[in-house]
Image (cartoon, rainbow, N blue to C red; front, side, top):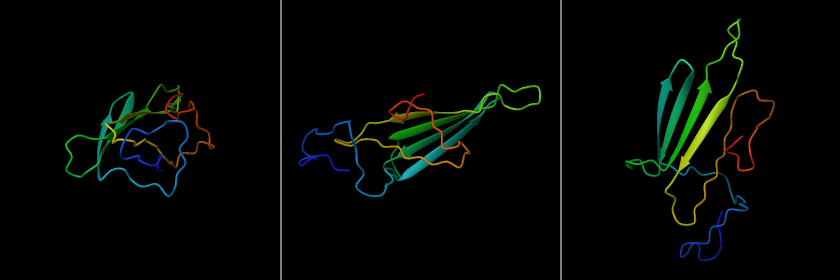
Length: 119
């Protein structure tokens, strides 16, 4: 994606329509992951770094997997994954696009608002 001519010289970014001009490219050089398990939920924390030797991450994704409540047979009553995204600081005229895939059997259903981040 390229915004307009002179995109490296001034703020020209706009958040209305982005059309990819090729395949997705990773925006990071290194990833660190933490898994925190609890009785009610497990949290997977992924930290993305622009350069392998950066001390501060640029992007973070927190995925929370609920473990309860359960019915009398021990089956989960609520099957859900909650994700939180943290981004920044961004370079001049760069936008964030999240492309995700899963092996979950969701029947191709995703509940979200129009920005893809909230229910």
